[in-house]
Image 1 (cartoon, rainbow, N blue to C red):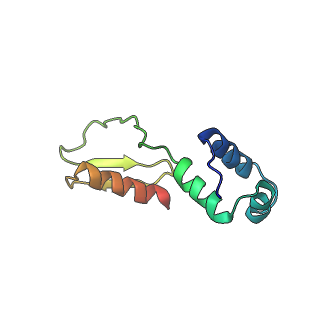
Image 2: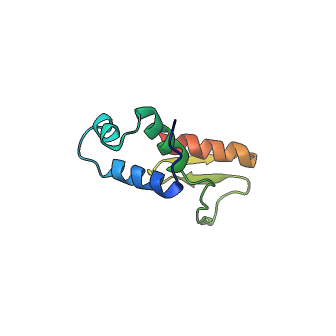
Image 3: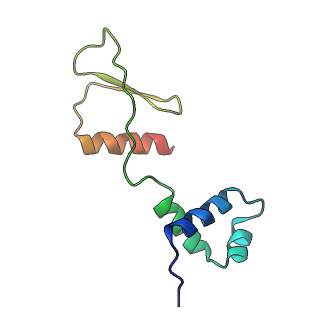
Length: 98
């Protein structure tokens, strides 16, 4: 029967995985978990449950209704479109994932 791990145990496993020196398969074998389980934990627990807020700075002289979005990776998105919140969040997620 599968073992039910606490959130602390899962975070410990993920932190150990990030600091490992060998392969992912070796780490999983040492910890007694499957590759699938590690991938699930990484996907489920490594991301924040809610998107973080970002500080926004409005530039002077920008025409009303346009925006420039500067991403952490240096990319820049400029647009005059009116996005719904969900569409804007999806655009940011996609741009930051590349």
